[in-house]
Structure formats: C-alpha cells, structure tokens
Image (cartoon, rainbow, N blue to C red; front, side, top):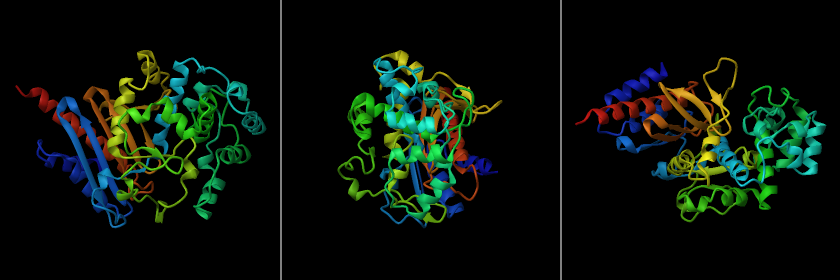
Length: 375
C-alpha cells in the first residue's frame, strides 16, 4: 500500500521534473513522527541529479535542509569496512587472521571471558557478521542505560564488556549470520592498533577522506566540525517522541557508527567506493563486492565483506542502512547512487524508507528508459 501510493506520486510528476520533492512532502505530511526527509539521487548516465528535502513540525531549523548534516549511524560501517580492506591491500593484516593477534590483550581477555575463542574469530567473520558475537546495541541493558542518561560518555571497552557480560555466543565463528555492532567495535580497534592513530584520525588517513571532497563528513566529538557547519546545525533526530539530537554520540561512535554527513557527501563517497577509488588496486574493489551470503536461509538479501546486496524494484543494488532510517544505495545497472534519511527509526508505517528507496529506483529506471529511447 505504501509503495503503491508513492509510485502514484512518481507517475504524476512530469518526466522532466524532479519527482523526489513530492515524495519527501508526502512522507512528512503523512507521518508526524518523521521530523524531516532528505534525499539525493544521482544517475549521470540519465542526466539525473535530484535533491529534495521536507520538514515536519518537529524540525524548526533553517530551510536548507538538504545541506544540513545528520548522524548516519550504521552507514558508517561502509567506511570502517573499506578501511579494513585498505589494511588488507597493504599486507598489514589478512582476512583470515585471528583477532587474538590483532587486538589488545585486554580485549582478547574480555572475548574469552564471554565464551568466545578469539583465535577462531577472523577479520572476515567480523566484516561479514558471522563472528558469533552478540550485538551490544540490541541488549536491553545498553538501551536502558542510554535512555536513563543520554549524556553519558561511553568508551569502546565498556560496550564490549557489556556485550560479553549480558550476551552469549550466537553460534560458532563462520556458522551463522547475525548482525553485530560489537564486531565492528573490534574492527575499529584493529584499525587503531595497525595505524598507531586514534580512531577518527586512522580512518581519515586510510581512506584519504580529505581528498575525496567530503566537506561535511566528520566524527562528532572526535574531530572539529568543518568550517561553516555552525550555520547548518545537525538535523534533529528522534527516537519515537524523544529528541535524541543532543545526546552524547558516544553510544554509537566507535566503529559501527559515529559519522556525521550529508546526503551529498554520502553519494560522493559511495561513488568513490563503488568505483574502487579508495583503493590502490582494482582487485581490492572486487574483493569489497565478494563473499556474499544470505542473511537467513532462503533470503534474497545477501551480505558480503562490505555491502548488503539486494534486489530493489527489479534491480540488483548494494548499500548499507543506518539506525535513523538512513540508507545509502548504489544500483550499478542504472548508474544510480542515492542517499536518504528520515531521521527517525520509529515511523508510523513500517517500511516507509524502503518504499521510498524503491520508488526512487523506479523513477530513475523510468527516466533511464526514456533517455535510451530518445533519438
């Protein structure tokens, strides 16, 4: 029903117009829980560079919503995974190396104390969510602690310890796909130890972020905000009725999340990652697309070393979502990259973000077909 209504809106917009604005307007008008919607979609082969934004009653900031940064949450994992592949590319680590050789003795001891065998947990298993580690972000104790004190300053070691104390192995390493933010905390520690730099500086160095043209992407509280962002405050993000914008970001800062960005920066990053521009060798780009396995038996959604792989509106696409109903998607057959955020994980109708993404893919496919039919 949601997708049908959105597709009707797309069909009603003239082909030459930007169909994203009515989509954004319809979402905030139909769901008061959504504070704002920001979208950027590019498909250069079809001449598409569409940007749209809409504010609901909960967003009272400046009008230039699409240019404002927001927390991208787990979409940060694309950056973390790419940085790990840079270490693999340079020979500093191996995908099948056990983390007992890569983590601090303290972290190794915590893992062993939680019933895990660190020597059997490899870099590959962490990247592909097949490590057997629980997800600390899903533990009721962690969620309750955040709600009780949103200003608490969390450290990575505390979150790992909580996962080991309140979680249990979900399976043997390599045996079961189970999404784990905790696994990405370990990957960030590997990156720090291999580069000898603090987390934010290490990732910026490995991915040469300062040379990619991402002026509005940074780690909140770990790096100074870029110049000019004072005039463009973060988009407000809600957890249900709770405004979480001013909460200390350390609850999601240490590898599995933490970056602040804009839809335009995210599109630019995805194009660079998809093209292999972050790596020195083409083989590393191919590696980033490899090791795809279903997230559940019989599922059409796969996960590889870096991306989720799925079929959206009939097209094979890659990408990664984020907690605040963020999504960063590339559909190679359409030359499409799109970034969206609803800035709210608890929407009135489940699946609103995915319906929006499917509608954008459908609109781009229609314009691409029209472009190809022109003489």
